[in-house]
Structures are given as structure tokens and as C-alpha cells.
Length: 165
Length: 283
Image 1 (cartoon, chains in turn yellow, purple):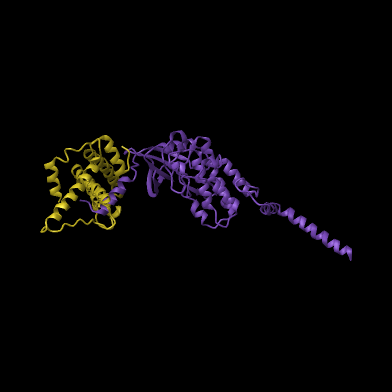
Image 2 (cartoon, helix red, strand yellow; image 1 turned 90 degrees about the horizontal axis):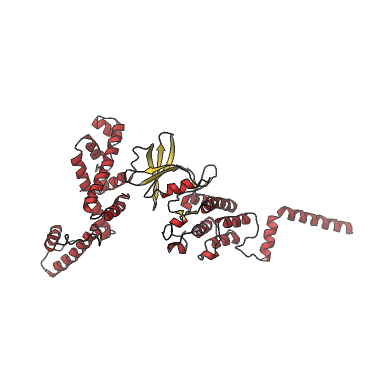
């Protein structure tokens, strides 16, 4: 369905016809996706042999807006993490990876990390603070790329990150 | 793609203020509202804890700096974070919030006295042309020495700069504030709601009448100033008649006797003695 959406968008020039003066890119994309999903479903119903497509949302209480918002933020953060990895392929990123990007339920303590990397806990604190600072910058750079105007950029930065830039 | 737990953690850590280059370090988050996030932070140079507020505007720090009053939490320091957010370090008040105080079973007189103490800094701010706009139990703290402090002035500011902007908490916002009207009446209404919150159903009618008049939906029928409201509460505490309540003859007599207990007791003793002497003399 994702591939079908982008194929349709490229064929019809949907994304090219975006007008920054009328709405934020995120809102525009959301509207395009909604329309595409409705049409996709209608077409699917007309085909008697087609396999049913599950339109259920991840959580029973989650609205499509909340899911879209969350996935948008997840995409943005994932891109920023990759940018950070490319920028800092060193011990600082490995500390950031081991602590802030740790997927286990319990994060290691600073002391455990210090022992693992053979540095002091103060250095762990400093590395994490530096990487988080760099991560904020990377996020804002990515957000600037994903927004069409300065006004939209500032509005998105405020909505997603709670900052006035 | 990042899993939910990592995404949530990253959102939290990037939101935490980057205080590099300042003398403060964050200990923990104390609370958050529409106007910003408040952290407990440590001043490394002076070795003391402060309440560090991070918000989108530096206006609150400027407002507070202009209001020097014992009932208004003082600002120690302020600045801008690398991401553009404003921060200000304020005195950390480790006290009892008004809602906890109300539920602690204090007497009516104590509750009313605390209320008059809340009125003092608000009246002072009004004299400086500043309103609070978000007076509610969570924004009032009673310190260890009994000092009453009004916190969180982030929604308020100079009246002429607040025209037609909306802020506040449902239940404490007057009807006209929802339409964008901001003036001293906004705080008087909230104080009325606050007084009502402090009262029990069984408390005297005049106390309820004061709260009702302060929180009258019609701004013209409210007290004209916070000072007037405070004077009315003081009259109630002194067992005098209050303007907000028209009492019956019986209530007036009861209040007079309550106010002059010693005199009433003396008169009664005198009358009893006179009666006793009268009967003894007749024998």
C-alpha cells in the first residue's frame, strides 16, 4: 500500500503540487494519505476476489491523527539518529547508543558504562550531554529539510520539540 | 525505526534543558503546565537547590523581577538555552500546596487568614499593572515558616500587553476571560473561586457570600479591587458585618454576642447576681 501510494503520487504529481502557503507539509501529506486510503479501500471493495486489507489501527483507542503524528515523529527521530551516526562514528556515539538508544527495559548505570568503555562516569555524563546537544541540532536540521517555509519549520519545532527557534 | 521506548526516552532527554555553560544542573522534573516545565535544579556555585523553569518566553522572568514582594517567589537568574527556550531560576519553595492545606482540617479562621495572605501579593501586582491570570490551589504554596507564596506567573504579565490573549485554568477563569478580556477582575474572579474552594458547606453564609460576590459572572458586581476583597474577609474574621451578605436581626444579634462574648458574659453574671440579690432581699 505504501508503494502504491508513492507510485500514485509520482504519477499524479501529488507531492509536486504542494503549496506551502496553504498548509504545513505534514498536514498536506496526511490529507493525501487519507484520500488515498479511502480510494484504495473503495477499489478493494469493488474487487470480489481481492484479499481483505487490514485497516485496523495499532491501538483500539488511538485516532488516525495520533498514529500519524507518532509515526511522523518516529521517522524524524530515526533520520536524525542515522545522521548522528554518520557524523560521529566514535566512542561518544557508542556511549549514546549504549544508553539513550538502549532498547532493553533497564538502562545500564553510568558506572556500568564507565567500566565497559574504560572511562570515568564524569566522561560518560559529558559524552551524553554533548551527543544530546548534537542530536538536537541534527533533529532541527532534518526538520528544516522536511518543512517548506521558515514559519512551518518554527511551528513544527514548537509542536514536536517544544522549542522556539 | 526506533522502538516506542527509545523514542519516548529520546523525546524526554532532548526536552531536558541543556544547561551547559550555566552553574545549574537538573535534578528532577517538578511539574509541567501550558506555560513551561519546572525542574528542581542545583546551583553548583552556591550549593543550593532552585526551581528552574523552562518556557518559550522570557516574559515571566521579567515580570517576576519587577515584582519584589514577600509573597512572590523571587527570581535569582535567567537566560536563554541554546535551543532558544527561556529559563529562569527561582527560589525553591519546599512547602505545602494550598490544596493539601485545605485538606489538612484547618479551622475556618486559619483558612480565611491564609486567603488574605494570598490577596496581598496579588494586590501588590495589580498596583504594578500586572495580573496573574492563573490563580488556583496548585499555584499557591505555604512555606515552612508560614509564608504564603503565589507561584507561576507565566500566564500573567502587564495588563496592556495581555489584551485579547487567553490563558488560565478551567473553573478559575471568568466568563469574560474566555472572550479575551484581561484585567484585575480576572484575578478577583479566580480569588473568589479559590475562597469557595477553601470553604466547607457548613461554613457560615457570609463567608460563602464573599466568595460568590468575588466570583460573580458579571464583572461589574464583583469587588472593585483585591484590596477591597481582602478588607471584606478581614471584616468577617473580626466578626463584623460584611457587605456581601444581608443578615437577619437574629443573625446580627448572634454575631454581636459572638463578637462581645466577654461583655455578654459580664452582663449575664451581673443580671444573675442582681436577680439572686432581689429574691434574697424579698425573703
